[in-house]
Image (tube, rainbow, N blue to C red; front, top):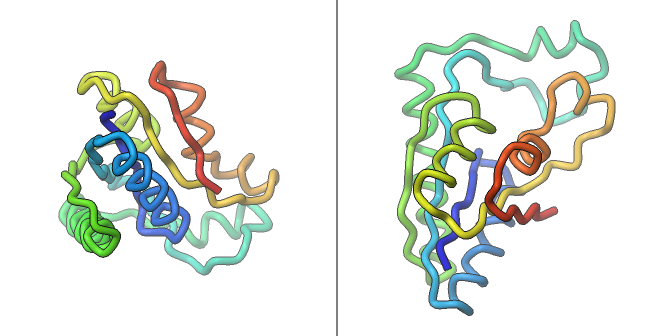
Length: 149
């Protein structure tokens, strides 16, 4: 089984990766970890829920491509180390574009059997403001998706 895990450096992404490594071990499968570089917007304000659009705007910053790539490579390195601690060797991919489009296009083009993604469990109001990558992936792809919570 060929598994693709979308990561963003969050604890939820690590939980999705741990789940995928269990499946790969059980099926003699392979795991590829992917991070999507989207230099336009990066949420880097606290961990609390966003309560208003103005709050969201204060937490969004524009990044240049080099900074975004470096952050993505760090996330992939951390995911590789995490998987190695679980006894699983993984491949990594740095993708470009919005996460929903980049992850789903890559999964379909490369013939993955499933996409595994973590879900942050944001409030309904926050999801309306920012959207949900997990939800977007489920709605956009033809590949089977497992959302780990």
